[in-house]
Structures are given as structure tokens and as C-alpha cells.
Figure (cartoon, rainbow, N blue to C red):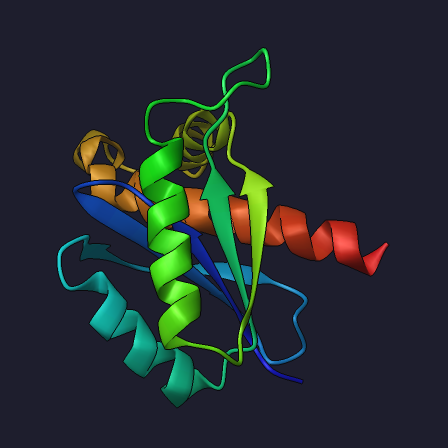
Length: 138
């Protein structure tokens, strides 16, 4: 089975997560700068033979798009155009940063680790990806 990639898009950083080959567990992978991300992702998708990409979709509590939703959509369109064989799925990312922060606290991570926004981004990507996996495995 092919792996799936999770993306927590941000204008400064992009958090990445990836599944195992059996697509059971999503794990934080890394955080990359937003500039140059499309080229990096093209290589990663080819190298890891990724077929599914899950990208967060920012919404307000009332369901309306947030300020970053348009930028996310533009990113997704560019990603799809350069990787025509992948399937892109959008998942509501509401509360993933809060859940990532709580996961770091629960794990006993040092305060300096918890303050590193890159850590939050890649854990948020893993939460997005795991929620998509869980939904599609039930």
C-alpha cells in the first residue's frame, strides 16, 4: 500500500506528516519553509510513492472560510497541477494546533520544545492525517 502525506499549510512554515506503509499510523515528519515547498513536495511525493495528500482547511467555528483559506486553496491547486497522479483531500483543521499543543504537554515535552512552532505544525499535520485515516478505516 502507498503512503499518505499530511500537510498543515502556513504562510511561513508547512508542517508535514506521513503514514506508515500500511496506512495505520500518521507520524510527524518535519517542518519546511513555505517558500520552495512545492518543489520539495514534488520530490518527496515521488520518492515516497505517495498517492494521497491530506491538506488542512481553515474554517471559523461558524463554518465560514478564514483569512488563510484562499491561500490554502491556491497552494492545493498548484500542488495538484504539478503532481497529477495524487489525490488531494481537504480536512477541517479546526483545533489541530490546540490538540498538538496539548499532546506536547501530555508527552512531558520541555517548554522550549512546546514553544517551537515548527513542532506544533508537524504534529498538527499528523493529527489531520490521522483523523483522515481513522475516518476512512471505519
